[in-house]
Image 1: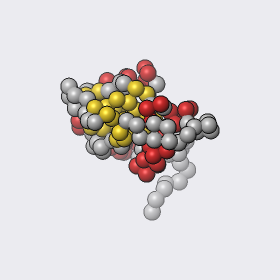
Image 2: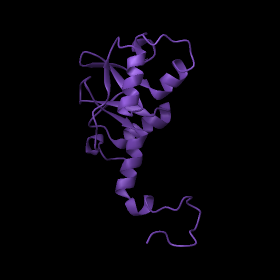
Image 3: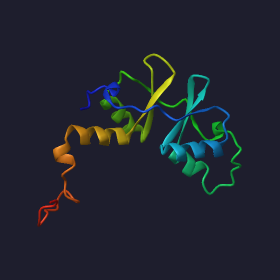
Length: 150
């Protein structure tokens, strides 16, 4: 599993906003897209990432003008991985750096193609081992007294 290339995953295009977009507009894009982060670009070039964590720590319950550009809150020059990277490389970075999202770019480029997230790892494990993952009782140590289902 860890040697599997990120390119093998089902990828959805990232939610991308242009540098200078207001934080209010970006928060609406996060909500509308039901995503955990947005990629901030200047033209086709990735220049930053704004995550749910950034919004919680830097925007929510603060005296923030929602017209302020996203650039004030984003993480500039985020760690990225090429599409040819492995899931193991991505997971290692996520554990080491405590990331939940890593932008994926075209090999050798700066154009964002996707965002690798912890959700991708969970979905991959569930698809690879459905009998083991999807049939677990509510708690792994719990034994069910009766069979579920019809």
